[in-house]
Length: 291
Ligand SMILES: Nc1nc2c(ncn2[C@@H]2O[C@H](COP(=O)(O)OP(=O)(O)OP(=O)(O)O)[C@@H](O)[C@H]2O)c(=O)[nH]1
Ligand SMILES: [Mg+2]
Ligand SMILES: [Zn+2]
Image (cartoon, rainbow, N blue to C red; front, top):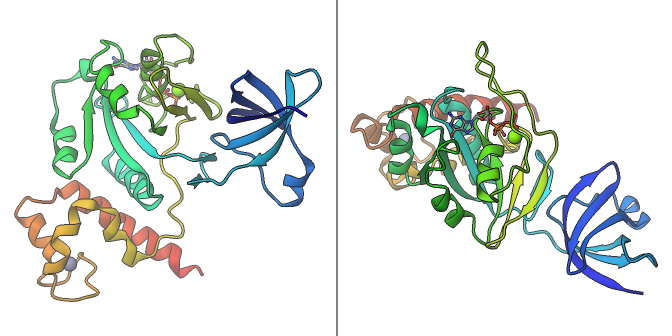
């Protein structure tokens, strides 16, 4: 029996499309996975047993995953690139900080792409995140600005594109692959919301190495199991100030002699990041009390 290795690029209604050395093979999963309670995921590295027609096959093995995300459901992601529109829809720092914290928790590399730079000159937000220690690109899909910089960050990684509907994920992706392959949708003038043009996750092989996953708009990965005391560790720029807190169990919210709050007063930590931290702290605290 012919066997091939491949990567699942797409899954629709029980069919999986694996990219192999023989091209894309349409596969079903063997019954054994269902018995084990396992579902093949987009991003999975698999072994495919070819059917006699050589065009279709069965997934016979799923190789060990380096990471698993639940929402969107993808395996082996190594990087999260957050796409934020500088304008239309207006950026929401809380939503972005929650997304970043969830990617930190999942152990992913993080990069931030601020899109639609053709609509505004204001670069305060990208500067804020650069100062906080993130890899930042200011780009415009419309004007094809800094697409090469984005490509350099994507090379050899499996990157999930994240960000609200309408920020331009599919538009950037089309520029990167130099093809109008992904449908884009208008942002409503009234609500400033996108229309959820992209419906399911799909892996796209990059000609220069690596994969990218276009996802339906979503705003964070799972944060349900984060404990309140783990949260400061998900705000990377807090790290160097944590040692200066008087109390070992300082929450960095209202305690005296808090290193983080001192850094906040001195402008070394941004107010919006600390604001997001406080809101998220309440969220994870409530979630952890449910159990
Ligand atoms: N002015 C401007 N408009 C852009 C830019 N990039 C994308 N757009 C527009 O923004 C709208 C939404 O773009 P999409 O690429 O569909 O956004 P998306 O993030 O994929 O949205 P969903 O698939 O709904 O999650 C479209 O009308 C694009 O033409 C840009 O750099 N500048
Ligand atoms: Mg899209
Ligand atoms: Zn503190």
